[in-house]
Image 1: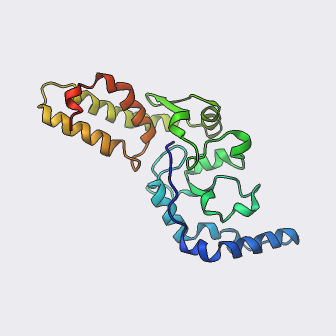
Image 2: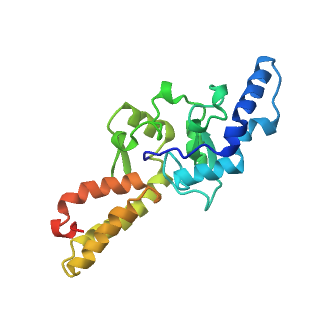
Length: 222
């Protein structure tokens, strides 16, 4: 999990969110059921496309790339079943894979100490040893546990990514390669492979930090 930054609120929310919220809360207070249309307004295509952009099309929790094999779910960070007024709140919406969304379910991040990628610093709470996620504090521990961030399939996916990074790191110490080539490889590692838009960015950054001492200083010179 990495730190995420909210983009500007979509126009449709600026125009209609308050109206939707007012109608929803009115129905609740009167014991009336709300239409499926009203209940799902937070998943409007304009909203979802902006969320996909700000998350780089990754699950905000496990950092798996979505859209190739699944549509991705609009996730309410604070559950809409508990926080009725936050159903259409822009700061409460993000993207999650189906598994993380189901695992988190209606757990309240405040009560269950689950990391909020927009407010917390996830990379300080969750660190990696290879493809395995470890915690450094209670929020990291609870997030890993509740979302099952060390589930078998996820570890297998991260391990494949880790092998790719390991191959790159080995090239940095291969003196058979010209120094200028290794310098380019290093710069690509930092600016491209560890970029927010890549899957499992947090794990990649952990690997780079772990192996940094073994990377020749002359290779790190731009």
